[in-house]
Length: 316
Image 1 (cartoon, one colour):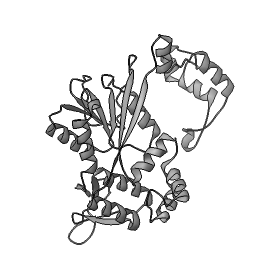
Image 2 (cartoon, rainbow, N blue to C red):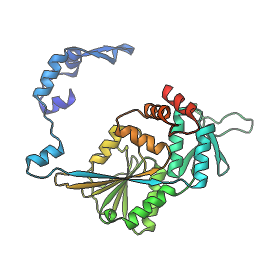
Image 3 (cartoon, rainbow, N blue to C red):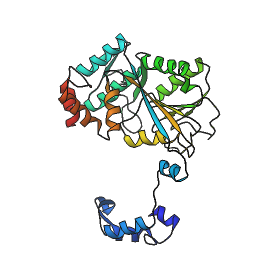
Image 4 (cartoon, rainbow, N blue to C red):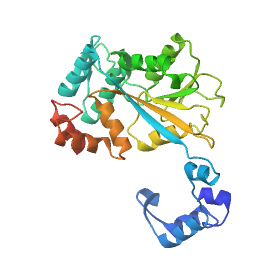
C-alpha cells in the first residue's frame, strides 16, 4: 500500500486501514497478523495496471546493445590436514578440538554453519562464563554472558584468493569480494593490504561513502544498503549464505546499463558444505533438502561417513 500511495495515491484505497479491510484477512494476537487474503482478482488487476517490469538484458537489447554475459569460474581448494581433521571430526561426532578449545554443535542445523566456518579457515567459538560457585553469569536481560572468540583453523581459501588477486588478469582492474562473516572480511582486507591492493568494506557496521575509488570492495553478502558497484567487472564469492535472494542481489550490484561482461569466481573447499550450499542456492532449493537428496544418491557431501547427520538436518 505504501509504495502505491507514494506513486499514485488512492490506487489501493486512501488509508492503510481501508486497504487492510479490502484485501487482508487479519487474525492472531489482537487481530494484528495477516492470516489470509481476499478480493485477489481485484488486487491483481489493479497491481498489473500500474506496474511494469523489464530486465537489464531486455533494456540493453531494446537500446541496440548486446546483452551482458556472465562467465562463472569455480576455484576448488583442498583442505589441509588440520582443517580436514577438524571438519571430518565435527561432522562425524558433532564436536572437535581446535587450539585447545572444544568446538561442539548441540543442534544439527548449526552444524552446517560451523562446517562452513571451518572450510573458510576460522571457527566462531562461544563459551558461557561462570561464577566461582559454578552458576552461570547472567546479563541484565537474564541471558547467560558468553565469551566469543575467533579460532583460526587454516588459510587454504585465503591462499587461493591471494593467488587469484596476484596472478589472474581479471583482478587487475576493480573487483568485488563477497564474504559471509565479519572475521573473513577482516582477514581478506589484511591479505589485500599485504598484496599492496587498496580496499573498502561494506557491511552492516561500516558506512559506504558511495565512491569506488579503490582496487576492491569487500562486502558482506547480507548488507542491506543499496549501492552501485558497477565499475567492477569481476565478482568473487569467498563464502555465501543459504539464501538465494541475498546471493542474487549481491551479484546484481556490479551490473549497470553498459555492462558487457561479468566474471564471477567461487572459491569452494572440496568435499565440504561449500559445494552443497552453492548447489542449493543455484537450484533454488533449501540447503537441508539438497543435503539429504545428495546423501540418498551417494554417500553425502555433508559427511561421507555420516548419513545420520544429513537425515537429521533434512528432518529438522
